[in-house]
Amino acid sequence: MKNRFKFLSSLPALVVIAAMLLTTSCSAPQKDTPPAFDLTAAKQEIEAANRNFMEVLSKGDSVGLANCYTSDAKFMSPNAPAFVGRSNIQTAIAGFINAGITKAELKAVEVWGIADLLAEEGELTLATKDGVQVDKGKYIVLWKKEDGKWKLFRDCVNSDLPVPATASK
View 1 (cartoon, rainbow, N blue to C red):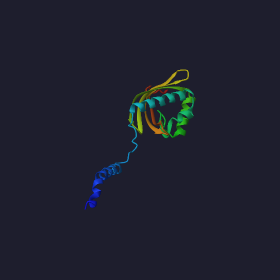
View 2 (view 1 turned 90 degrees about the horizontal axis):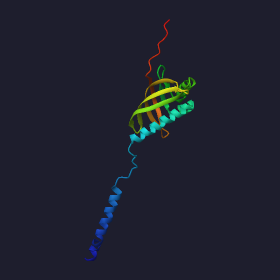
View 3 (view 1 turned 90 degrees about the vertical axis):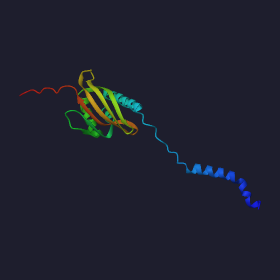
View 4 (view 1 turned 180 degrees about the horizontal axis):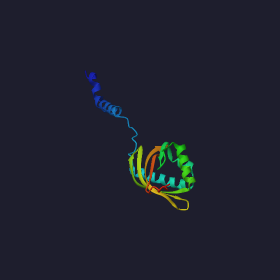
């Protein structure tokens, strides 16, 4: 009879091993959780993108400026239909450059958003390479990440200057 219950002496060790197996096999798998969205860091990235935009414009590079936009972007300037897509945006920007606009001062007033989409409210001044102010106004930009970088997705600009008077006939 003594041999019959001999396994009971190793029972505590078996219980510990079983408990360890259960806790490791039943625990949920560890997932790589993405870091929390940092709006302050995103705003700094937008300000850096704006500095890049101003620098590329100062070089008169319409291709470089068009590449600041997402492939499905829209650029909406006053007194014109929306320019849709990089190629059309490049053509519009080339028109501004050919008209002598090669300086922009962009100032982000506020940035809001989430990890996938940001909205920026800002102020702008446009000038010629000689520093002659051509326009002053405000803008709203929606930014979207493309290829790991924030790019302009929707760009809407409005002038603060009065509409020029037309000559009467």
